[in-house]
Amino acid sequence: MKNYRPTHECGVFAVFGHPDAAVLTYYGLYALQHRGQESAGIVTASGPNTPFLRHVNMGLVSQVFSNSDLDRLKGTRAVGHVRYSTSGSSNLVNAQPFVVNTARGQIAIAHNGNLVNASLLRDELEEQGSIFQTSVDSEVILHLLAQPASPEGVFSALRKVHGAFSLVLMSEREVIGVRDPFGFRPLAIGKLDGAWVLSSETCAFDLIHAEFVRDVEPGEVVIIDENGIRSEWPFSAERKAFCIFEYVYFARPDSIISDINVARVRTEMGRELARLHPVEADVVVPVPDSGNYAALGMAEELNIPYRHAFVRNHYIGRTFLQPSQLIRDFTVRVKLNLIKEAVEGKRVVVVDDSIVRGTTARARVVNLREAGAKEVHMRISCPPHRHSCFYGIDFPDPEKLLANQMTLDQIRDYLGCDSIGYLDVPSMVRATGQKENQFCLACFNADYPVAVDPNLDKHVMERRSNRPNLLGSAPVSPSLFSQRP
Ligand code: AMP
Image (cartoon, rainbow, N blue to C red; front, side, top):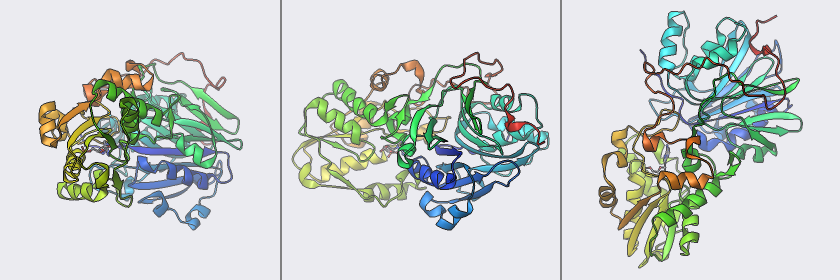
């Protein structure tokens, strides 16, 4: 069995029915840049029997597209993708959206998430003659979709893939949004001048002045064509398992997910943290930008002044993308500098959203001590990370996760702080205003909603859900993957 490179954190965007589809997608991807900085791509289409146009490259959205690239991407429909993946070497061939020519016409796909049975499916498909172009798990979906049409072709293909997938697909007739039945990753629907847009996060709608309509529901497939938008529910109903780490860290603070603003959740997490681990101190300082909102909530709740004492150099890439420990340490130091007078002689509470390897937290404590802080109290607005994520967040192996290797006392000593306090699962969940059983918490509690070893994967999504359509009744067989006339 071959090893697949997971798709990991990514952003997807799509437009149907707008003369400037490529430009809108470009701005949409711009707003989703935090979800992936490795590569970016857009595919556009004008309608049946006209070739899809594609431009993808390595780099940031602003580096990948020139005005002439966007001019060339004609069409009223588009799908776009930004990719984060950190595992293995960067490779243009893995940049999305992917496009294939099939018996059902051209299909483009962009995927956010991570499939847990990709290797198994790939082996099966290769035995049947499929030739794979990339090493990315998303290509499996494309091959399944490209298989000869069956009455329920699209849906039976989608039911075969297990794991986390928020997808945008484009055929010659339709743009389609798909959210896996657990709803691990976000996907939202917007509207602009009569056109429909889909985006990983609602912050992209604000940028292009689109109106946020609603989230794509877990297990929902939205099909957008000349007749409008409709929903299908091809998966068996599952418990919801939205990744709570999207609220904690990954999503942009100005996005709305499940009807609640991400910044509000983060601020509330800070309040919860203050109640769970109160501390007498003179000043609350965030680790920018990830700790900003939690620190604010904590400062308000403790009634202690909030000081933006760390100054960030914005022209450095994410430390996480650096390959070696040597460079990572260097980057962490070069990224933030301290305003000494804000902390000198003070009892400081320093707040970040999470500790992964501990590199960032340790460096912050060193910075604070060097600047003369009298006491340093570390507060983290999520529980200790002890387990891997198999659904699209890139964490290192468990033996590199600090909290997997050390007790809380050991962590405190390793970081060199006077005290440490993490949020616990109930308080974190309370901050979202939702219920614990709505979330995937696997990186904290190892409760994996979808079996991760493909050989153990007993998840057969055969039963068709009886859930009603939200957007009107749907034709029985979507035209997307019927045979070319
Ligand atoms: P570390 O230095 O390894 O402990 O990483 C912790 C820092 O990385 C925190 O400031 C987090 O906001 C940030 N972080 C947490 N998870 C991720 C992730 N999956 N990718 C990139 N950065 C992350």
